[in-house]
Length: 274
Image (cartoon, one colour):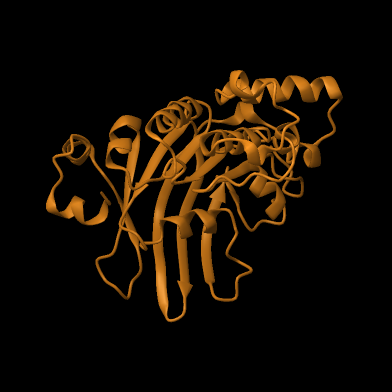
């Protein structure tokens, strides 16, 4: 049994522990005066799974991801009240620093964020702060990561080139690879394909499906066809009382069959953008 004073065993250190529940949300309230934006409770996200989150624009989907990653806590415009467990440990536990949490819960944004230096240095940016690797270990890791996201054949002779010269789709896959270098338990994805062409979108979706076999993926999307292609679980964010904030419900099998075949009900059309 783990000593209560010892550091939490994170996904980065113990990837073999990916079973059960990765993230448990007992309560999550996010408010920006005078409005309560999120009022969520009793949500669980299993290890090795894919959950798509849908809902109309402005409902709080992106805010939800940022609360999980503890990115809004220092913003004076926001009041955050949460009871969230990551691998059974409260996210505000002294055993789990913000830095460690963000290494173990990666966040992929809608617009890819690459740093203005080489492809290789971008890839190794996070892992170099976490552990020391030899040059040969770094080279092996770079190739493995780029292979995993389908980029190796496209950029293996451009590793010293400024990453800003890559296409948007290549930048997005590079960002995913950079996050994977830290071996996260959870990947949060905020509309990662919204600015990509159809062919690149399909590549990213194939990658997402593959990654969900190894870790927990939580994906925000407005694309009804993407929901159909990705399968997995779907959570709808909605409001039934404007003063109460956004709540969530899971699409059951019957609802999934209706909505994934594009035979959308009036209700579903109201919260999925076209």
